[in-house]
Image 1: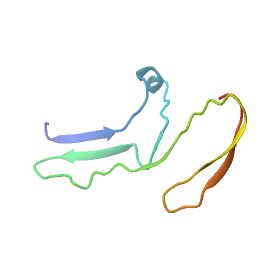
Image 2: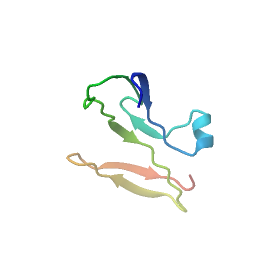
Image 3: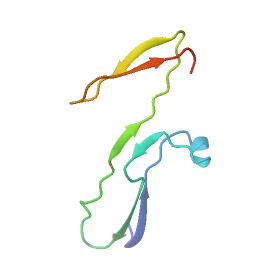
Image 4: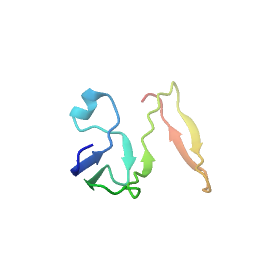
Length: 81
């Protein structure tokens, strides 16, 4: 890697979706600019803060999600996407 200014960027999804600006992952920061030289850069951290859930259901149903150290979140899944 050559020294200089670099940009680190996270992207997820099929390449055709990325061209349209679609990205279904939630990052605290998707881009980090770094000046590369002779020292290490251990402070570069990407933190995922959420997600997008796509559900296809054949009928409506009550459901819930449980996250670590949190109360269950109830919601209704409707028929279809």
